[in-house]
Length: 212
Image 1 (cartoon, helix red, strand yellow):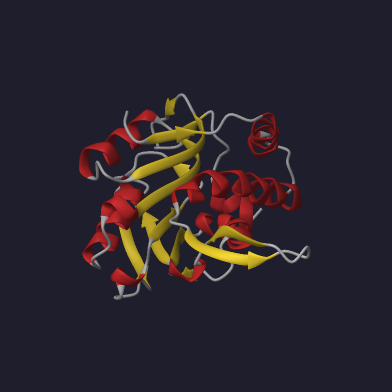
Image 2 (cartoon, one colour):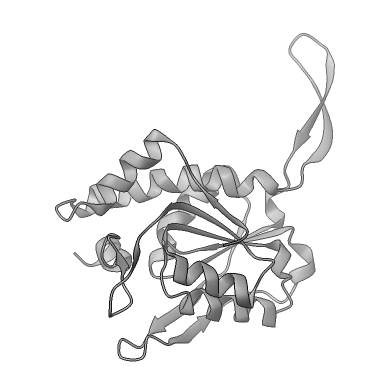
């Protein structure tokens, strides 16, 4: 597996435990996913280009610094569950633009189908795209979303897929079809079950965020 970064931090492990627990209530689930998103955002944004700058400190001293132009960042959450990471990223890149990608899954074939695409056409404007989805399972939804992004002209080497839970099957499909796309994950899980759910995973992230 290539281009994969997996977080290692005790707070990350703690939030993953909260997310996995079947009895975690919706408000705690949302908070744990949002807090986990901060750690993922810190890692994912570490590759953003910084602009040289200068400031005057309260001591009257000019010092060279660096700053980000967060307006040149695009967040692309995959609906529904990807919305759970948007607030976390906006804490770090508050001027980022947001484009929603709607993808549903056929539960019989596990194939991904697009139903919403609000991606902008001015791909050259953006320094980086963060594609957000808590679960990288079969990889079918991620591949469909990446096809939509690249179809709009976004370069794969400027796209980072951010997920909480990932498995080998999904990672390998991304590696094969989009080898320049980087993946940042909070954990690597065991495998997929016969209906395409991550094991041990957390169930359906979208349902647990919005419906239960």
